[in-house]
Length: 168
Image (cartoon, rainbow, N blue to C red; front, side, top):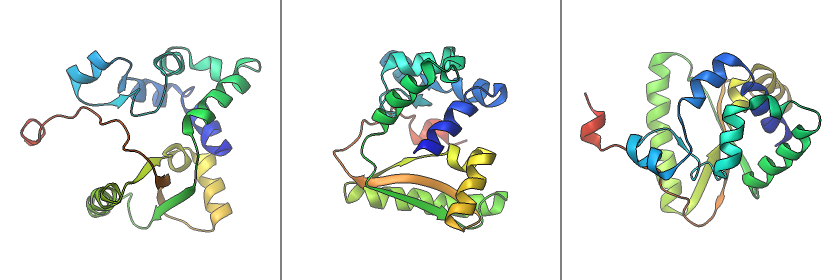
């Protein structure tokens, strides 16, 4: 979890990453209902205030005094991590991504049917130093998803657009 948090804090301070992902942050129920897309603070198990601070003042995540406090807050938000899972194999080429994406949708839905939920740790895959650490530590290449998985109450539902609104 330390590597995940360090990667996230680093990435939120990388302008390209920050500017792209923060566009998807939804800090209020009203914004989430209006756009019906993005990263809703509820679904991220985050307080609005910490979600907003990370988006608007990411430099705080790097400051020697604030970093340990914010790291502790974020680690608490991640909750209990009973099991860490991963998926690996062909993914990064467009043709592979469609197949693995299809698999992921079915996998995720089957887990939910069994009250098993997962929370992705994307920065462990997309942050180059973290991904390299994972490859070396685990001894597996082509990892495209790392996640926490376990039984829990049903997490908050994200507000989503209808199929008709999404299909072209």
